[in-house]
Image 1: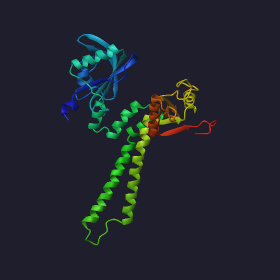
Image 2: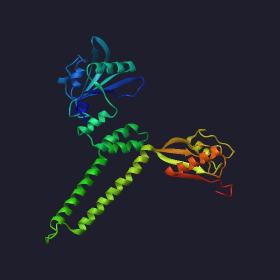
Image 3: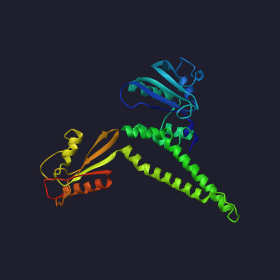
Image 4: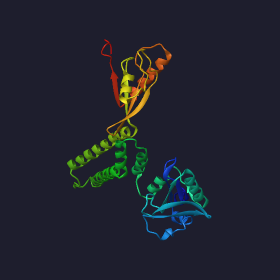
Length: 315
């Protein structure tokens, strides 16, 4: 990787688009403090302590841009491990863009997507699983997804991996000793202890592998497919769950031709309920396409709710 790509000074707007009371611009890199010092004449930022906040005007070529608060984070005690400054200004989109224009004019480069987290990883502030958790935390749409991302970002998953690695190294070391001295009448490890260690490692690997599917479901939502024959009440059930007329309900069989999906959060977990076309033999082309999509959704489902009409003799 090009060293300049990781050592130059970058900036990006950290708050979402739109008008708000406050906006934040984050600057990070070796020269972050010196660069911001050029437009903040109130104080000599380089002489200030790390993790302090300072109020004052932001000037550029005699233009008063805004009155801001600077938060200073000196290396290595920052998110990226580099010198970092956060500018908290008023949330006007014009002010935010103007500050970015000024920073670019004095030599700062706009940050690429994910570059702050990448720098944190390269500077040893987090490992890959923690870096991934940052993106998951930002995208979390339920309390369960939030908790999973927080646990991973705080190193819960990393600790398990490190412990598993230690156990594997212990196991490999004992095996190598046994192989090196196979002709000697020396036993470096009890066979039962080796087998027990192998069982523990296998169990941990299985747990980690199984946790992937659970974590993915929590992050993207539990897929719940509502299936059944025509007029079994699938659309009625979806509307009742959502408490709104989301799907068209009719006595005419085959009304639902395509899947209808909506999300409900239940006790902190996101459930993606999917209403589907009724399953039956049909010669009508459009309805057959809808039934085919129903069968595809059933294959992808985490949970299937199959409805029967108790007033009919066939399911």
